[in-house]
Image 1: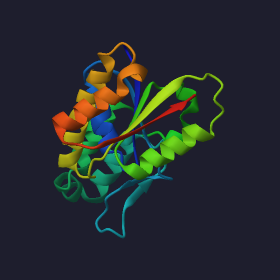
Image 2: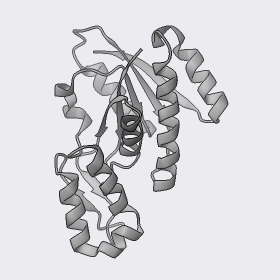
Image 3: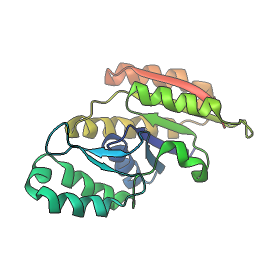
Length: 193
């Protein structure tokens, strides 16, 4: 069964975009989103992040950070991350404004507060289609190494879900087997469109 997936993280576009890139490469129908008010990328210090509006093209961010301090942003991995993002899609999108993208079968989040936000958002929508959506949280630390690991785990989980006839009937087994095999605790919920 071919499912439609959404990858959602907070505001820096690392974890969701890593998973999006891997799934896209494997032929999945996938989108990615952030949930923050803005896209925040590390700056020269913790108090000076680079802040962009959702919808700002990744190419613009890449050019802006190259101009500001190419060496710093290459060294901390932000330039390679943005180059990856440019190859995946034009600009970051915000989850809360995704209504025009249609519905998803599975929404995968990478931190619990984002999972809670997505569950609440879906709960507060009008459920006119009565179409189920599976929301899963795979906790992934927000750094480049963990994002790469989390992206591979997200791909494995989505491959598993895509290989079953009806996820609603066996989601518990899929989750239990995944947790056992990969030693990662998953939290999940079912909502509706």
